[in-house]
Image (cartoon, rainbow over all chains, first blue to last red; front, side):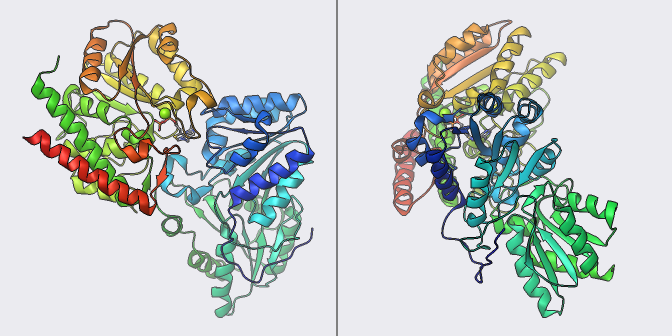
Length: 321
Length: 284
Ligand SMILES: Cc1ncc(C[n+]2csc(CCOP(=O)(O)OP(=O)(O)O)c2C)c(N)n1
Ligand SMILES: [Mg+2]
């Protein structure tokens, strides 16, 4: 793991989907076993260049998620390395039993990419806004659950996945991420990245909430509160060791996720704390609500996922120390 | 058969739905315009003539129901509802705005007059069947209308429903397949060829009709015919164009969801004027 943090966290000029496509294309040039599947969201995912370069190894199944996951499992049985994409809710809820049984239970080798996590589904609204995907995916035995934070991490993770065997769920922003890492950074799946080394409280975040937490840390610094920040991009297997160390050293934990607070990052962290080192903890996340339409900024306010919300929770948890 | 006057009224209503839907989407600047436009004539016939409804009592127990399973066509369904008086027409300008009652995809808990929530393709098939079964259990004579997309017919759930609806002899379920020949990523024949959709439904035991989906008279006649069929579900395969009736949208290849460019805004303005002029002709 080599981490080069950027000094300037601004919106990246590349979209995550284009980086995804480029990386997958590079891998496919080297490895003939790689195949891509989609369920009529290939253009939305920026995967048309892949389709053009590897028409034989691309399967756009049409609008049929369950069939796609079953086909991916069959391809895996013949030694292929399938990357299957659709929007988050359709990659998880819509075909859960196919992922669970044809995929995980048979010990297949599939990378499932679910795009538009949480509020980033924006104007597609409640039917398309996954606040539960991580929850149901982490409930599948042996499933690895990842949410790459920016394009540098995405590239590294997608490359690593090509060489691993198993079931992986990659929760992926399609558009521009906020830059966190500089080129040359490499990551270890299952190992959190320490972005700030404060002493009063540890905020554990993932996805778009990492950038939001960086803003919160600035707000809190002005109030004299020193924040430690972890990027928990691997939700499962979760980095138990680092959580315990940080709980010990800072004595308070706040989690921040773009997902239902039930059975997501907050729950996973709480499980570790409760069993190992009970510590005052607060959770930022969607409070058991359905999604709705709006801009990402509006939805962050609506579901209380902003830097201000995080800062408030930090002040609350500090009182419980 | 429709009288000349009724025909004129329905054509006028279709034009009005198309016009107000274009304004609605243009105001937002983006939306699922292709699939919203291809069902305009069908919506005009259903809401303008066929469906037994009462906009003052949207939940009237003896009404006919409509499930728009291709839920992304919400914008034109909302227009039809507004023009029928379910809610003020100005509300169309709130499409997708914060706290709106009119989200991208049909939502029965948000929009007055929407009978079933849709957006995850394939699922409207089953919910429509359930509605038809429930009304039959209650000995109501209500019809359940269902609109599927052609791309949507990729979903296995559609065919599970086809089998089941036939087994239960659901003659009060009348289904439309909006065959605009395109799904999100392109032509259905290039992605997952559906072949002859009518023949597929026929082999599941359905009564089938192929109809020009831009012709309100033909759509009306097909519905009347379907109502005569007993002990068998009916499907009407609508031959349509994605973006139907809006030239610049029809001519755009990737017209499933469009984010209007400046040029497209201009083209839409021109279309709005054309549609307004056409409306005036109907009034004379
Ligand atoms: C289960 C599911 N998968 C994927 C999508 C994303 N999606 C929305 S519309 C669409 C294409 C639908 O094509 P079609 O049914 O032909 O609709 P139309 O052409 O009438 O717009 C897709 C893939 C979805 N809404 N639901
Ligand atoms: Mg279509």
